[in-house]
Length: 180
Image (cartoon, rainbow, N blue to C red; front, top):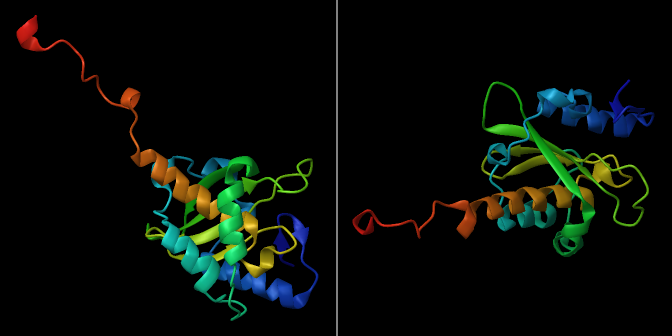
């Protein structure tokens, strides 16, 4: 019987949908040991605002054939990202570097004392999201705010990694050789 984050899925329709996701990925992300995950930001897939918008608003679920239309998730998460508390890591799947699973921990936005949720996304390294999942009540629909938080977190990691501060590069003010 399929489990989601250690909880048995009793509903056969929901279980089938989750099993289909796992079959596409090749492994259940909830059953992977923490030491198998890669936590370096440079290893995350490239993610741009357009990729996030395409997935949350324009895409249809490969498993339910329903349109996500998650415009509220995409705008709301951008505003609340700084306090949701996202932690992220990635896992290479199959024999290719082109498709990976990115998982994370995202705090509840309204119930801060509850245990953090564990969304994951199945994504190509160029940013195209293939599927997503979260262990919240809306997580099987693949487009909850926790999944959106994970997507925006990955995008922000790349954006901030590209920005080099004055203290992050070699000194420009070192004494010139001709002045010594």
